[in-house]
Length: 122
Image (cartoon, rainbow, N blue to C red; front, side, top):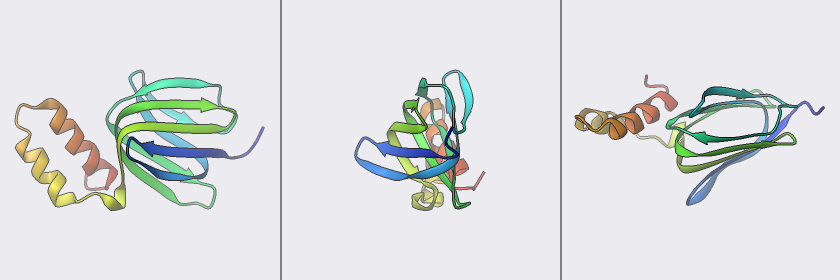
């Protein structure tokens, strides 16, 4: 059993992050899931939620993911997102404005809240 995972975080339009990690934490339609080296193969549908990747060199990468798929196989984690933004790419003021303007639009509010949580503003 390896002591690391190879992780690929890909959005529809670009590769967001790629590297080696000790753990990946995300949320599927079945609930929160943490992936460690040696995890059983999994295929899951992602919901709008932050993703946390703890790298082998001790960094913590956070990203806002808006839907997509999670695939785990042989110590490889692939996160194929419809939309994904690293925390440092998120404009907090814009996300707060989107949340304020969401009104009754539950999906828009969820997207904005996900961006704010990933950026550490919530």
